[in-house]
Image (cartoon, rainbow, N blue to C red; front, side, top):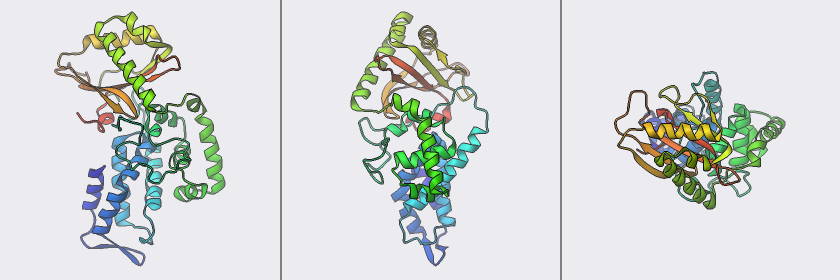
Length: 334
């Protein structure tokens, strides 16, 4: 995030940029970047589900601010920056969806605060009222970001602005350059598409964080023992395991479904992992996850993996997510 804004600032002229009758000096540009960097990055990440794309979009947003500032730079910058960023995000989503992705697509992993609070890179409560449908931490959970994939780019933009960032209909219409009736219709369709998620919402409360950490600890213990039946006992009836290697590493290219198949799949992987494993539990996308690094690895095997899970109503693991693609781990410290 900071690097993207810094790169944009370095492109700023040494003097000033003309914006109508106003000018934007390099110092003003840098101040704008510092003040709004976290908000813009968080918006871009939710829009794309990609930390690398968010970095690029932040840089492009600030380059536009430098090269073509708004007509009146005395007005608040955040609405204008949000408008530029959300529309760049829509374009990025459309480009991505035209490309063929190898295997299941998962959102990029990012580190979040180990508590019931907004992600560490965002300002708590800044620009968001208590009326928002989804809070800042829930809206970066893997479950929420995966649910957003069912929406069109415009539906996704409207839902984020209305239900996460608590924009009014009028503010959303201005940001997206569409009419207010169009905002209302698109919002209704987006909420309808989110009904399946809403029935089993993943709200990262402290209680859920603790239950998830306990489930992961038991899962690792059983994997280490190599006992498939013990692993099966931790899994729900309709458990599904998704692995995102992005075509870069060996990974399951289709979802693995069912207790027996998921248990055997992960036990086989654990048995083949090389020595030199470094394993740590961290808060990733709002919930505890396993961050693993391996020592000497065979060709084609991933050197790092982030594994997270969702719990069903019965307390058993209903979803397992394994992220190994390098581009999807750029937001994780190793």
